[in-house]
Length: 100
Image 1 (cartoon, rainbow, N blue to C red):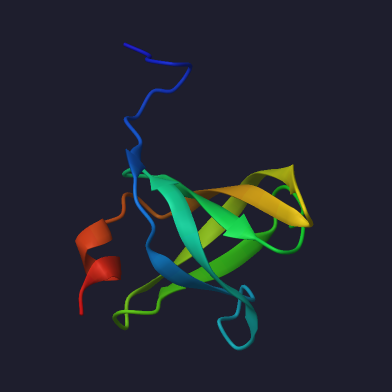
Image 2 (tube, rainbow, N blue to C red):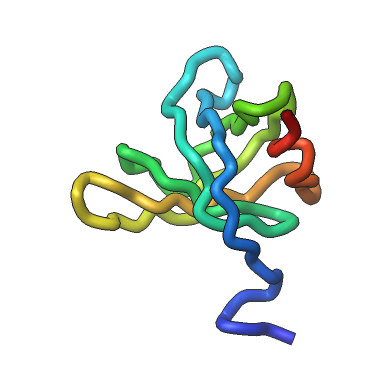
């Protein structure tokens, strides 16, 4: 059953992240999530990211990281964007991202 146009439930959570180049060698931006689900997240950014771009996502609280694909990028005003990420492969254990 779909709720609000979504298959998965979203949890509002601000989890600090680092967006990385696909090879995990260079930092694109330090940011945080707006909301999360088992297979993705919506994150705040200061720059637009192209749809289908492959990136790395790393936790600032732990050593956990994952690959992701940009699903959408929506302008939010004031040079801010919200980017939808789909994680690959599988699902995300957000407790690993939030661990101290």
